Image 1 (cartoon, rainbow, N blue to C red):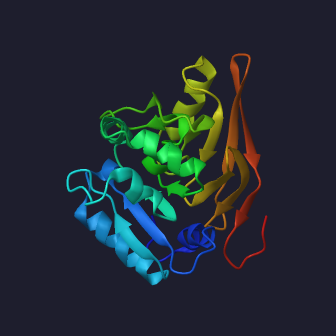
Image 2: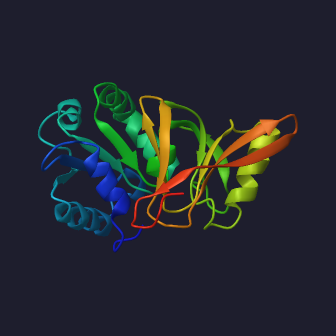
Amino acid sequence: MEPENSLLDQYIVAQSHTVNPRVCFIPTASAESADYILKFYDAFIRLGCQPAHLSLFHLPSQDLESYLLDQHILYVGGGNTRSMLALWREWHLDHILKLAWEQGVILAGISAGAICWFEQGVTDSLPGELSAMDCLGFLEGSCCPHYDSEPGRRSTYQSLVAKGSIRPGIALEDGVAAHFVNDHVEHYISSRPEAYAYHVERTGSQVEENPVQVRYLGIQNNR
């Protein structure tokens, strides 16, 4: 989201514990936007990585499974989550990503690439509305990104949780990431000094929004 602020990208690369790690961008949600792909290459070359990307319209010469399992990090971009997951399932990418996760490949992403790992997420894939949708289900519960920056995100997520239309979960303001190890969150981190995350839960017919501790990755004191 912030080309001039690479704190989260640096953090993701560091988790590989590898010099010059292989990082593969999966830009399906953006309809494989060429501009988005170029920005990815520029960002991750600067971070000392070996960037690549997966196109489902121009497939790699090797089979998808071996291509993706050979990566250290798989980074999923933002865009239309519904269309992305439909294409993934057609190409059995959902099963390959599950295998990659089980074998220790780092899975990361932004927006659509953040919610896709959960059982459910809040999406604007349908024009003019925010709604709940089923995702890959690697992680329990739901996720709502852009909690502070897009009108209606906060109120819609809370309403969906209150009605039982979506499972309780986590809400992330822009610049915040949830770091999971296996299927449990280890901590929340941020590229912005004043950005927050919340657990959003249902108690009876009411919703509770509880802030969680977020560690800022910059030079300011952690909070």
